[in-house]
Length: 203
Image (cartoon, rainbow, N blue to C red; front, top):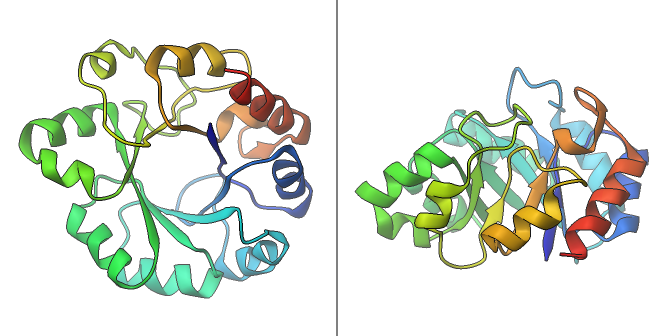
């Protein structure tokens, strides 16, 4: 089970994620989030991340040239677009050497499935709640009726108490968590990170 811990911003909780065995660590560059960090901070943090762990820059509705510039300055290996951006933007990022994650809300995923299903197969897919970042679980019935293919990631309202059951129900290739490992909004908790990864791996 691939586990991504997102919204990291300081060494202690990054170290907790790495020690607990996270497969990917995420850093938010989208404006307006309580988890937003700058490229210089992330460049320092990623020095501690082994090559076997993906470093992911998360962007939302930002110009593609800004995304590329920030991702390079931060030194991340993977770019996650989380604002319903066109699949062509992810194609462009891959051409520039980045690994990619296409994050869609459940509603965006269902729309893409109806209107551009081939585009869903070109990049690793992350399915989030209808309101991304709210930390609220969502009704998975529509997802179960039309599940994604490949090694997709489940996000949205996950925490140590529900992640194993949701993995068993939806069968993703991995999970992504942010608010579910926080002691308060935007503040990561090392113990919650460890507990979440343990619970996800037990599924």
